[in-house]
Length: 337
Image 1 (tube, rainbow, N blue to C red):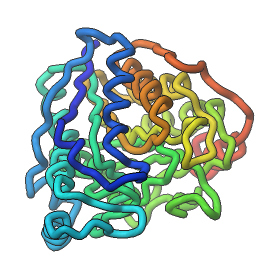
Image 2: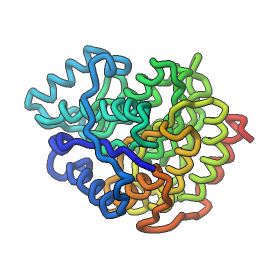
Image 3: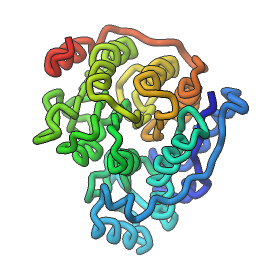
């Protein structure tokens, strides 16, 4: 089955500076990994368009957008100790935020069965009014809000090792979007949000699900979480679209985290995501992943899974037994067992 691969050369122009973990070589590693997978004609590379102002303002206030654009062009570089910009960052951010919306339009037109947005900068830490955690605009949230405005129900599954605090905050009160995050959790783990009892508020109660895993958690706990928590929640919610915040920093070789996934695990998790909604309704967005070799093979496994193929370019599924108690607690909390 064909998979759209949305990417743009302008993403390389976002340069946070020497030694920054989220550097342009990440995107080159992604492309190399996908090319090495030999997906051939099943991979359709397309060029995204920038997000429109209307699409952005469904998530981000106008004053924030104006200030961020001005900051990127001002010559100043550090938004905070983690988040830096360059002259090309604003254009890259607009194209990153527009990629998912473009992919959704193409999928509606029947161009492919799924899409992978190989974008920079990443987005899931960006709140409505704050750029943070390497992220400028919240790419997955812009797409989710656009689809929700069209009357669709949207699920976001975030398997980046870091909790997507921005995405959670944006949809905290919104019953149209189900947000599910599987992430490393602990006193020193960025950004410090994503406790198991964070479940939404008001009309959005129950549409936030967090699985905060301890260091050392590997694929068996993730698969159990998908089978016992994520899949039943998505089925109950009745999602029309699956959006995946596809961060690959839960890989066992990643330098910023202490989880234990392999490329084989990412193949399993992505296949499970795609199976929860009809064909042509799954879009994955590149988030984290900072070991270049691990990033390349993990993205290749993810993209192949979106196309219905099981590709394990690096290591098979993993299992240590760590984190299964979190799955049990989440199952009970959300009354899924």
